[in-house]
Length: 414
Image (cartoon, rainbow, N blue to C red; front, side):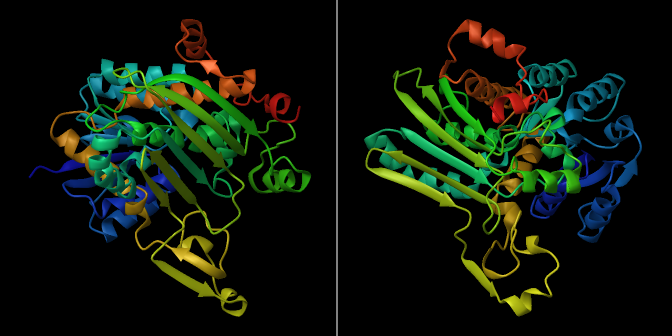
């Protein structure tokens, strides 16, 4: 069986998580890493865990010449420039045949479409990494409910929430570099997974057509003086001048093009969830049946008292984004697999080795970006926007939210 040689561009938090996931993925090895902060740590981890003997390279071109598939894990504001370098390397004869991009594909519709265009022009296979659509907890529930759907009809409402206490890196908090706030960061997950859950069995992942979007963005915690100071002191980000939303909720309406039925996806995301840690909660309701996933309901729980907690250095040992090292704590014995990182990586590896795009390709990623930007637009306009309106579609092609322009104070403090 052929092995897919993988190269990394980006060596931060998500790259480390996906390297852990790679321990459970077959037919691949890590061979090249672009020289950024954290590259040495990932290379050492890969060697220790027999994931490959990666070398660290000082250029994107060199990475592309030493792998079959390159994975873009670098910060959002670097993605288009990185993709341009990859495309040039391919045209110059680099060995790379496929490209992966971690969500979001672009900070704007224009950026996402540019990523699609560059990959297409370079004749590259693509994989858009949106891990929650690969979660076994979701897909196993869907599989078990298909007989009920065949009798009763499909889901009519899906709800998805992702929440934690805030990002690790300064650039994530900066809307001008990240592309917004929690909606850009995590709303992409929730909107995409709602559509996935609502999609009838056997239909492509873009089968349901988005027809309307309503949304509200708010700054509920990190705009308060005490917490603004924390951000400024820790990350150098000034939310008195360029704030981003830390809470978002909205509803996207989809239409089944075959039956005309309207279905709803409700999304809620926050950077102010000061509980056990990262919480993923999804549910869906159909006629006579339902499903629910809650990542904080774990088969493993531990308790740490105050005295014992003094010896704990890292609260995230048990759970991503955990803010507590004492009390009753949920534990995931295999976070990488639970969150879908293992399955999405295996899908990309298997697809690229078979010479085809992954289940979620760049075109799908561009659609997710379109819906996220539509949500920002709906929040700014303070109304439900019609996604079938050609004028709205045209406006979204060049749209950049006020929050991502650094004008969030006009939206969030007014």
